[in-house]
Structures are given as C-alpha cells and as structure tokens.
Amino acid sequence: MKFKHVPVMLNEVLEGLNIKEDGIYVDGTLGGAGHSTEIVKRLSTGKLIGIDQDENAIKKSKEVLADYSDRTIIVKENFKNIKNVLNTLGINKVDGILLDLGVSSHQLDEEERGFSYNKDAPLDMRMDRGNAFSAWDVVNKYSEKELEKIIWDFGEEKWAKRIAKFIVEERRESPIDTTFELVSVIKKAIPKKVRSQGGHPARKTFQAIRIEVNQELDILKNSILNANEVLNESGRLCIITFHSLEDRIVKDTFKYLNKDCICPPEFPVCTCNKKRELKILTRKPIIPSEEEIETNPRSRSAKLRIGEKV
Ligand SMILES: C[S@@+](CC[C@H](N)C(=O)[O-])C[C@H]1O[C@@H](n2cnc3c(N)ncnc32)[C@H](O)[C@@H]1O
Image (cartoon, rainbow, N blue to C red; front, top):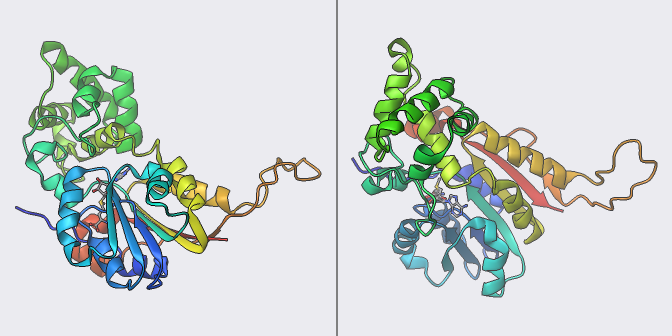
C-alpha cells in the first residue's frame, strides 16, 4: 500500500506563518512538499527555500514543486545548517520558517529504508544516507544500558529494560540485521498478554532507534536558535512536534528566547544583557482537530508552537 503524506495542521501552519506574497520562507522539512506546495501558491515575487536531508524527499519535492520552480530553491541539507544554506544563497533574513519534525509517510513507505516495522528490510533508518551511522549500529553495538536508556527516553516504552536485555542476548548468537529480526526479538521481550495493547509492539522501540540514529533531539535546540537568528522582525517560526521530549525542547527554547534577562534572581542589576528576541504566540500548543485526527491518524500526537521575532 502506498501512503500519501498528508500535511499536518495545514491551515494552522499557513495562518501561523502569516504569509506575505513577496516574503521569503523556509520549509526546513520538505518531505513530500505538502506544506510547501500551499506556501508557494501564496507567493508572487516571494521565494520558498525547501530543505530536507533525505535525497529521496528532495527528488520527490522537485517533481511536486516543478510548476513553481521560479519561486522555489530546493537544497539537500540538515536544517541545523540553515544559516550556511542562506549564506550560500546570499540571503540574510527570512520572513517565516517551518519545521515539521519526524519521519514522513514516504520514508515509512520506502521498502529498503528500514523505518517501518511492517516491511522486512536491513536495519537502516538514516534520513541522510550519506551518514555512516545506522540503526544496525545502535542495535548491534550499543551496551544493554544504552539501549535501555534510548528505548525508555525516546520511545517511552515501559518494557525498555526487557527489550534491551533480549536484544543483547539475541545478538550474542549472531547480529540482528533486519527489521523483522528486531520485531521478533521485541515480541519475545514483551509478555504475551500485553503485547496486543497500545498498537504494534515494535512501534515505540522503532521510534526510539530512529530518533537516536538521526540525532533528532540533540540538534533541535541549536536549530531553533539558528532559525531565530535568521528571522526578520515580525518573522514567524512554526514548529510541529510528534513527541513529548521534542515538544519540551521547543517550549523551553521559545521561553529562553522570550526572556529579557537570564541573570539569577539574586542579582541586583542585569549583567547578562540578554534581550527578548521571540514573542510566543501559542501559550499552549495548537493540536489537530478531531476531524483531522479521524482523517489523518498520523496527526494524533502533533503539537504546533509558533513564535514571532521581536
Ligand atoms: C514529517 S516530514 C515533513 C512533511 C512535509 N511537511 C510535508 O507536508 O510533506 C519530515 C521530513 O523532514 C526531514 N527531516 C527530518 N529531520 C531533518 C533535519 N534535521 N534536516 C533536514 N530534514 C529533516 C525528513 O527527512 C522528512 O522528509
């Protein structure tokens, strides 16, 4: 079955970006260009810079956005390098940036990528296949303690300890090479009577390994700080997360950027000289409507936070 990537909270994002037809916008997570197509339609003399670290997403987006090639620039990069990307293009500041984090339906659908527990493939899960480090390295080289920690932290999987133990026992015999081999170990680790509760038994562990392979949480704070630096005054930053730890990082980084001073309370006068840089437009994150969740179940855990450059 082929999945189409349906853009999450599309109207909320378009409104959040406050698109001006002559503005410059960055979609740091092009994916299948779902959001980008709608952004670019609203531009006349403006430009859309689309970034993705996955070369297949870049190929797909070029096809989807072919009719708008006069208004789009597509770059294969990690969005953590947004400042370099803009620098190379000779662009100083932009009017809006979107980050729609995580994995796309296209990536899950691509047989050989190893993102999906429903397809038998080599353990890979790299969004950028230029990187050497893959899911195979995590599963076969991490210590039991390291495996338990990532499965617990990034997968919020309560059977993390057992899954880590079973993985280490299994690989003593021979390496775990494929997604289905890993699924079978996870199934053995989770007691039979709870295995059918809460979706596929491998879902949380696969999510954890993917986050680790792509360093999705490690790069987030600095990426937000970099994005904030390249925003024009009144420019908007829209970030969609699908994981509570990701959302926590976005919330805390927005709060930091929103502060006028970060000196300890006992300091009589400010010595840090930090100035407020970002106004938070969403005290609470925007979540998808019930209708959206019904038509696109992938949107269920999405949270959108929006900031405006001061
Ligand atoms: C959820 S999808 C985006 C879908 C897109 N908004 C759409 O409507 O089609 C996330 C995309 O971001 C990309 N991505 C994730 N982390 C990235 C990073 N650090 N740098 C660049 N691209 C990244 C993934 O490769 C994937 O294609």
